[in-house]
Image (cartoon, rainbow, N blue to C red; front, side, top):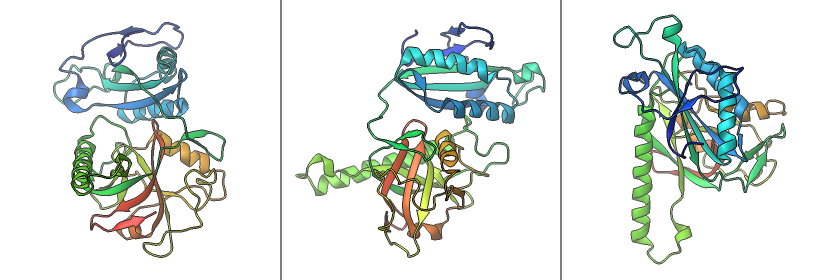
Length: 328
């Protein structure tokens, strides 16, 4: 097994092959992922040698390959990833797929076998994956549950994209890069301000900003900097509903109507988002895809972010751009 945190290139794979063709190589500077963002990635959690939500990651491989006209044998690739996961035992696998270098100059590619050929890169990182708290979905699947934190609205905006690019976890993520930098600045400012005002308070009273809520260029609030978002609404502005379950309650997901924003023009269709939509689909109140707009924010009664590595990240409050705080 190669060292953790090193990038490997996975050679062309065959579903009939039992041996993973894995080579430690340096990515060339004319790689199209580096030059044009021509490709996509997915990040997989590994616990006890098993890839979390592997069927959903395979769906992503197939859907993204189809959208970008890339030739990927997802079955063979998943077989290789499962072998890598067994060696890793616990941590993260990050997979990057880029289109192979083309004969034509510039952005273009040929609509042929060579145009659909791709390079597949993998990094295996040993790291702890939090499993102390888990929440059962109505369909029986268990989802990691993170400690409650707070969220803040960000002024950064996501690009609106045409189909079939909207929703893809493509390598073109500069809008998210800038948004994440804004969130880090806010966290640093909050920590500095808190330190100056409360020097003698215990460390556990420090600000706990867990995520930033992002809107796209049309003004719709879409997702977090590293996650998708689900929410519930109350009837009166800035009212906290006492009838809803606490995140530690097993009925949290099945109590009340959950909504999640549409990703038809921006954002990333996350693995955990789809797992939660599927998990709630058989209940009396399946998740509804609904826009999240400015006027909805004061009426939020519940809010959580989610991704495939961290699971569900419940929020206790949301700071609006105006500075007002909505308690959840």
